[in-house]
Length: 334
Image (cartoon, rainbow, N blue to C red; front, side):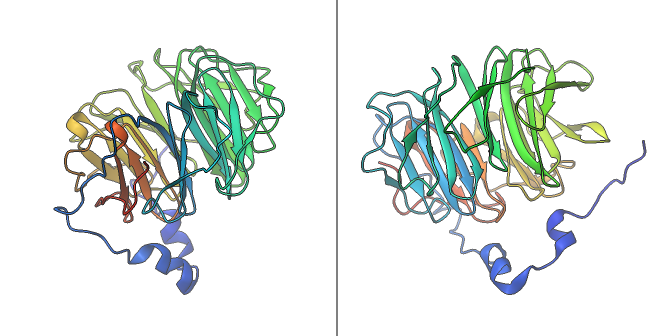
């Protein structure tokens, strides 16, 4: 099937939706590259996951701490009495809707919030899953997957969980979630090259993989555009009805990839260098002012073009311009 070499992004298609919305992302104040240094905190803080929506972000640690930012990563505060017990090894974070976040341990203990992480509640009916490697949410649905392809889903923002009747049985390494015209689109990738998709977290169907059988390490989505990486210089782009594009970039060792929900993407490669795309994940030809002395291990974005990245030693960096330039928080997690 022929497809256009380029297409307008969702942002171009809808135009300016009011001066207030445009101001939220059109003219952010960005620090110079020299000032854009990732904030570091005591080495005892090991951040493990990040999720975000509408300028609200949550990061987790491997000792039960959860932090929230309500200003796109500028200032962070810890929950005064988070339900996870001290030492809880939180490994994943997800967002399923406005103000709704979920965090979980590898052993399947889950906590959720419906007030932008001001308070957390333990899942009333938690999933009986172990070896959790990824979580993702959209449109009120949240999915947890294990490294062996077990999957559990929640339709009530993380309170009650049900096991998938037809899971993505594979060696899962990544999970993405996005809104495809009002319908959830979940996708998993695996180290054996297999790909599965689901619209509800319950029934998963295989997707014809890209040529070459890449050993995937991460996946993300923005709308119905999905991008996956496999530790090489290639980005694998997929969209419904068109299948795969195999895009060779100028950056090797791609291991982290994130989307913002508005056709924009950022990826991290060798040495912490970054590359980005602002046209649905199909071109990847835009360079990034990479945060000095910072190697992102996970990134999350929102539809305003904000990104928050976490790195070794509790480091955090943020971008307000679709991943182009990065700056440190005023008050980092501590």
